[in-house]
Image (cartoon, rainbow over all chains, first blue to last red; front, side, top):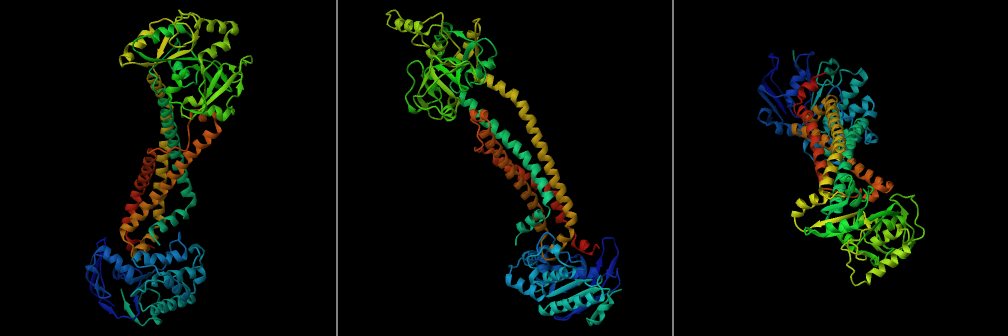
Length: 209
Length: 418
């Protein structure tokens, strides 16, 4: 599903960083571990096509990212990948429903009402469908962000530090929600984190330093 | 879901900001619309009212006053002129047509004009009902006069001396309404037409004797009727009128006639075209100041929209990065900001245009003078499309820099930023 080899990325400041080779099979979940500054987020952004101009090879869903034009990469990202960040970054001007609708719209896919119903109900958000996102609790907002990421049934779900700001109880809840959502949609989950609490939850791990 | 829905929700999410931008722009647009409608209609009315009249000859005084009084019927007469002198002018070979006007009385502030049928023909007047005035004290009234005074066919009324309401009433002579004219959208709608003799009759000391005398003259075999007023003998040395409206036979008239008239000590000639141009250049200063004020408002609103979009860019950095991560192309973000600027100014200009028309509609129903001048709010000019297009362009220009910034958003940097 993801194969990285001889990957080197050069920051605009001039320093460059080399990543270990690894590959992830379909349906496998992976943990990307490392301290702050170890390049976890950079690697995640590279795999997610948010950063370009690398040397080496990144294959995602059997596609070499370097080979895609910028707009092809945008479409690929929208249709094949889902992202979850430490902060939820919902669009506050839109309702829950419209936030979700943005996902297929921006990916160039048809907006399917039944699919939105389905995702909302599995995440127990159905009553909040028409709510403004500013009225949601922290936990609800996080579930909306997960719903938005999985709505297009992405092949790969990337999560960047989804739990590091949460207490133990919520950390447990969020990681199991993510695992559930990923397996429910047949997505591969890749989590970048320095949160050691997650080591017990996902067996496949890549250590960066 | 569409970009428009997204943009509309962003606009709705900042109601105060949106309101101030739209109010600023719509005020500016409203002022421009009012000026456009007002000056266009005024110019149209003025050319309509002065159509077919090349020269006005009257008593010495201000030439502008002569025009305002005898063509637009808003100022007071400069004085009277001898009928015999007016006749001398009308006999000039360069004169094709000469129409006498005798002013002095009014009814409920509507002017009674002593003249002949040629005057009504100037404005292509047609009868709505009744028949043209024939004898003294018979009148034809304009459409607005009927609407406001509620006079009907064969109604009798007493005129008041002077041109404003509240003058001394001529109670011993009553006019009778013989016809009502169709609306012409000219000054004629606000006038009461009769013959010149009626005006004289109102103001003569011994009306009975004079009238007998005049009718006695008409059977005299040596009687040469005046070219201007047929019941009076040519070269009558007593009768006076207010002015004569003149049409030239050839362009040569424009060169020679004014000089010829002005050389006569008691007469003055004024050209409507020249005087109205002069009037517009005087009014123009005021219009330009108002226009300038409107443009300042529009520029400020443009600036305000630019600042609003630029500031919202900071708040929306994450929104944009997230949208990019969901597959939005750079150009989609660019278009969404341009759309936001365009929608804001489109709203502002549409509201401004409606406000401009609304103000004129209210003005034309509340203020009698606007009504009399025939200024309406329900008239549309092609220039309004230019206003609309111009404002949308303004919105796009104001949104350009923020849109370029959005286009350049570095997703990775923003998302990794905190």
